[in-house]
Length: 199
Image (cartoon, rainbow, N blue to C red; front, side, top):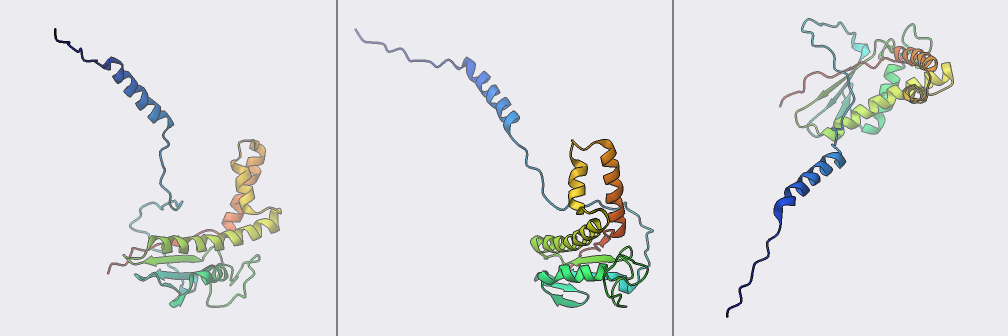
């Protein structure tokens, strides 16, 4: 008499339930990676906007395909860019009581009129572009912190951190908001990025 082996069957009825539970677990526990980049508010599209900018109020930075940086038609190193931007913005040409510059005729008249222009070429690398942006923001942050310390005794960054804390009460937030706006108006960030040069 031959032995018949009965094949074992796996009960697959609950496999669909397990797969569904794993899918739910994955959706609940997975973190979606957000894009990193520069925090910028883009201006509204306006075809008729024409600005009359004096040459002395424009600090031109260009980055070529070889990632060389030029500031006001001179090749410079990234390390000296922040100092150049700071001197340009804080020149104190006219009617600026808080500027500490020498008031030369080649640099900006007033921080409110100072415009930084960044031109890039098609093959400019993204890390160099971001580094240039960081140096420009570093110059603005330095000047804003200096004035914030002078006027309110606290760096601007600390005021902004306190403003966004949940524990800060509404009255304090209103005061901080007014102080932050004063500093931002003293040194407004005006960064112009014309179209990328095609080559």
